[in-house]
Amino acid sequence: MLKNQPIYLPVSFMLVVLLTLLFLIITLRASAKETTRKQTAAAALMLLTWVILQIGLTIAGVYNSDTSAIPPRIILFGVLPAIATILVLFLTRNGRSFIDSLPLRQLTYLHTVRIPVELVLYGLYIYGAVPELMTFEGRNFDILAGISAPFVAYLGITKTYMNRNTLLAWNILCLGLLVNIVVNAVLSAPSPFQQFAFDQPNVAILNFPYSLLPAFVVPVVLFCHLAAIRQLLKRKPL
Image (cartoon, rainbow, N blue to C red):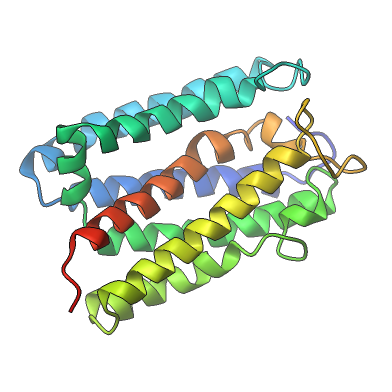
């Protein structure tokens, strides 16, 4: 665990992780497929197991003990398995059927977790665990996605005030915001790939509990955008 940080930061971030998990479970429970709804408990157990595994690897020092490893261990054991799971879902028939059954409104509401994530990142910047560029005072505008998400979900989807193209544009734009911060996070973390922020590198993601940001929270947010984009592309424009 990072030293010299107030206890409210790790506690707040763990609450963000639990909130993300809760949002995902709610989304599965609202699936149009009965089989998905029935398997929600099993899926929740698998997700929780993944979170616990990542916590174990982080506390054991797997991610921060050798920052010269190629590829970085956080990518090898945390990010790549999550990305591989998303790819399997999109490349298999059953996976695509599962994706198409998820409610667009819940997929959109989930992005509100990006608000507390950005607030925690700002706190970590103040205490020297991430560079300024990873906050909304730097190059990170991801908080805009979180702030706009409930309005898009309610006004755009529940009230149907937004057409397919508007919803599609919002998802693509917010996906771009996500990619932006991910690239900056990778290039500012201590690793052979580090390109900037050498005075205050992104050490948070290599420590508990913040390793769950790239290993769990970001993949879930990424999946929700990709699932929504797939669903919207399948719709006929009005």
